[in-house]
Amino acid sequence: MILCSYRDGPDGQLRIVAPDFATTTRMKRSSFQQMMDLGPAEPEGAPEALDRHRIASPLPRAYQFLDASAYVNHVELVRRARGAEMPERFRTDPLMYQGGSDAFLAPTDPVHHDPAWGVDFEAEVAVVIGRVDQGASVDAARAAIRWIMVCNDWSLRNLIPDELAKGFGFVQSKPACAFAPFARSVDDCPGWDGGRLHATMCVDLNGAPFGRLQSGVDMTFDFPTLIAHAAKTRDLAAGTIIGSGTVSNKRDGGPGRTIADGGAGYACIAEQRMVETIATGAAVTPFLQPGDRVEIWMEDEDGRDLFGRISQRLETA
Image 1 (tube, helix red, strand yellow):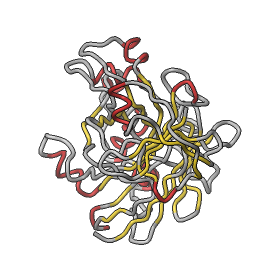
Image 2 (cartoon, rainbow, N blue to C red):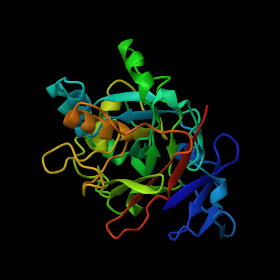
Image 3 (cartoon, rainbow, N blue to C red):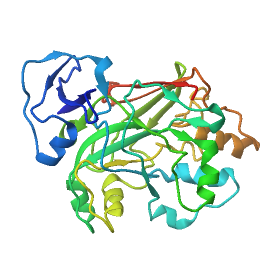
Image 4 (cartoon, one colour):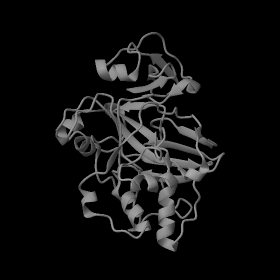
């Protein structure tokens, strides 16, 4: 099953989407969150042509959004770029923070940030889960995964160091993120193996390829592991979103190469800057400037679009 939400109040209007993405039908449950709380819903009424201008993120808001760093290659590059070794425990104990979830951006909403803040995108896979009890096992966590989505987790890189130096985590440096138009159920998502999504994460910057990464490769922690980690000391409500963190691939035993050099590229600007710093001592690629546009989508092994496209433009604050 494929779902989307039309813009309609804070929680949107739930719609079921045809496999060809051409039509949608209203659902008896009024919103995605209501469906997660009360159970599956049936279509109501006749199919209508999909109106992409009305599409919000599948969950326009959520009770909880927990974002991880499941691709340890990304974390290792961050440390190497500043001359620090990565603690070995980062390979066995996931990094995770609680992001803002009171209002997500629609997949085509512009963003308004000061370019001096170091505006960057992050292409991620995300899952939506049913209720998970505190202390749940990895197997119980796996059984709770209901939906797969794609996220653009906006980051303000130049604000991060001061926030982390306080020892309390992200707030100002992690503004509202956006999700691709469509959520797919786990039983209708090509490439889903129960813990990882095996598909190509595609990123274009200003119309040019920036990343073509394999999301199932180099993912140190799968989603069941991340969910069980989050549930160690708390219940997780139905509708909780778990993000993978920036998709990151190793290539040829090294940190990776740009698309222009025949590599997989990157899912965020920061990672390319880290590689530049490691290789030459200085970052060259700038963060986003007003007018820049990023597009993020995922393709299956046959090149078919799985979740629709995030297409967002940076505008001044």
